[in-house]
Image 1 (cartoon, rainbow, N blue to C red):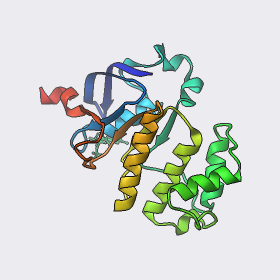
Image 2: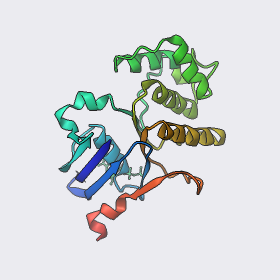
Image 3: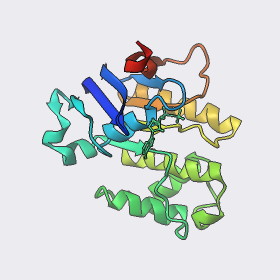
Length: 210
Ligand SMILES: Nc1ncnc2c1ncn2[C@@H]1O[C@H](COP(=O)(O)OP(=O)(O)OP(=O)(O)O)[C@@H](O)[C@H]1O
């Protein structure tokens, strides 16, 4: 379980948010909302260890994550703006490489199945440089299925995804949550009314707004 307590983050001497606390249980899908520049990406980056917070604490199963960052690293999958794909490698090679960084070797058939699931059957051996923006993001989504981490941290995962893909991605989020996973994401995507979403408006924690 993820919990954050009294987080504060600053950029260039400007406090973006302060006093931010929330907890996530298995099954939760939490949207971090707020206008451009509120600090949503900053929050997700720092949650996954890309930079620190000025104040506050991030806990996994009631334990501060800084006490064992390597163990925490295995608990989440992070899909950021930059997908971390190597342009000259194929989707298959990229996934194998990225998974090996986590000591995972799922085997070619699992890699092929994950790529097929995200609509990339037939593109497994095409250099990523030759894929469209949406196809590249789909390679990133395939990685989520293979890493099997309980927590997905997703920064604008709907970017460049076509309409059918948007419906599919909504389904994969619900499926992951239904299997006891947790998802924290930023997006400007409008979910259907019935979507099981919790929402946190980061601008509520901006000191300049009060
Ligand atoms: N590398 C950086 N160096 C300095 N300031 C930065 C950097 N990246 C972002 N910022 C600033 O931090 C603030 C928050 O940026 P951030 O990208 O976290 O916002 P956001 O809520 O994700 O915005 P958006 O909805 O546009 O994606 C912005 O004012 C931005 O100018």
